[in-house]
Image: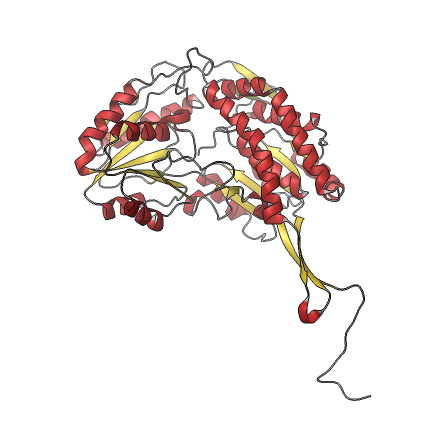
Length: 480
């Protein structure tokens, strides 16, 4: 997932621009990292001492506040990211649904346990403590759902949060936090820090920050990991996208398979971290499968986020991204790739691109990078072993899906694929907020979110307890 540079106007304010129109949507003052951290550090002890029941109630009120502005928030997300309104509405619904998931997950993974102490008499206990001040650094593609998936569990556990939204989607982040403030969560408990890469770097490295929850590109995530390598006391959770494979094997339902592949590769203009980047196809199915996929792609409606009727796909986030994608398509084409559908930029000066599909089977070296947009690379293989090997031919490991095949094929696929999300006859997207979400390799550092988010929001504390001191000494002491 790329981390575009910030747009800053002549007054030094951060500017958010609508991808579909080029109109300035929002502008705001770049925040002060030191001031935000000092305020958060001062506020933390009081928030952590609040009963869990109170924090839970405030977050449930937050859901009601989101519900009251869900249409306005969805429209803002759509305009700021370029995604169609129907996808933005799904995102807002996901924000609301996740709160109850987080409450349930916290009770399950971070709840208290008390046990009989056995020979020690008394009791033993496992409880969990918050880390303290947590930085959440969000992405542009899901500017409400992804940060909510980290902010909510962190607050529930008793952390305070400094949220730096993507420099490409600050308005959506601001509206998300406004809902929290109206719900009664104090402004010093969850702060908005407006800024670009420099502010994100300073926030992650700040001595008063106890945890960093980052979603974005592998390059930025690795830089954060390297920067904090000498500070093992700071929890770091990285979600960094993927070069995700989708394998098409024996199935008579080619139209259904094509629909799953097109949704996986081109939904949200290919700007999901779980989007399919590589299609691996059995040789004998290649011609029929490509015909179905091409036919469906040619019917695709591409347009602005508020167009009526609604498009399937909007623009990518900005012109630099659009240019980089078309250049990547040309690079693949000039290095052995064979175009199935050409990627084009239909509107001069605007970041709309048409889906590109390219057969890269003949390429001597296929680049293992995340091309964050509607660009699908196709590889033909002769047998299932080759399909698994090609799917694993990446340093990433976020998502993978098998379309078609037998239960035996899927068992082999599941057992051998290196990914944190492995699906069968489904898109490459995640399995829902009630499931863990994360990857391995360049996709993450074994800190999955979703229902596993409590694991990086708290740390466990074990205790042996008795109401009065009771002890005696034995071996190694002289008699009185």
